[in-house]
Image (tube, rainbow, N blue to C red; front, side, top):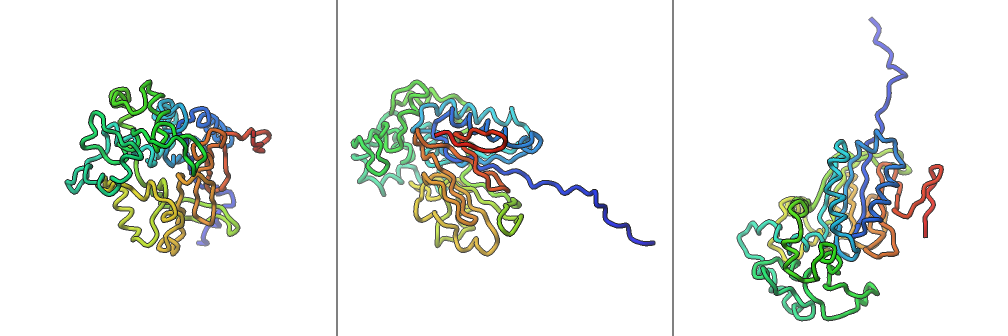
Length: 326
């Protein structure tokens, strides 16, 4: 018997949508506008089955951190067929540290041990010394502190309470900056959200479209990036375990040392996507999506895979064309 000819009518499944959303920093209107723009650009069937990866930094600088968390917490019930991933940013890590929902260090060391390395900065940064500080992670103390300098010369902006600009987050919960009352004002579902954030996320098969056509890649999402010169497997294990004994988590708060893709990951196509850096940078498979950087006058952006299309909260879509609103 002759073998059956393959059918010309067979349907090739479209690659799954993966949408990576940059730092929101307390701007609820930007988040709402960005979400509406994303929803308008895709067939509902595909959008409702998409994987949405939020790259962290939901709080600080902007005025509506509480409303941003409400929005994110409600997404799974409103879009039950989507997959939602909420990465921790360095700002969210510090918020979680202050309200007491970080996991205890697995090596039995107290958080207080982590203060020593940076104690020269305590006076300048005005670390928090109120209720509950005795065994608080360093970043929680810095987050709720009162920095002495008024002007951030690197960003060209005034500090809002602390070195993290956490004042607006306190205010969004109706609490003065640096007050221990925030620990009670943050509702339980927000504390659970902060406790449940992941430090790293991996996807084994994500498609990306470039001059070579459609490529199948691994994807690693981490707020700042992965360190150069350190074993990638060890970094992944550390970040998955959410090990809190270190006073600073480089994968969440590093800068130049986490900018590039580690050479170890170049052997097999691996997308590394991050926010954090206050820039939009797309170079090969290294994607840094933080166009807004927490500035009021800059957009919040998302990148859509496989198309590599950028969508911003400021886009005004008309007949499929995005016009940016200045």
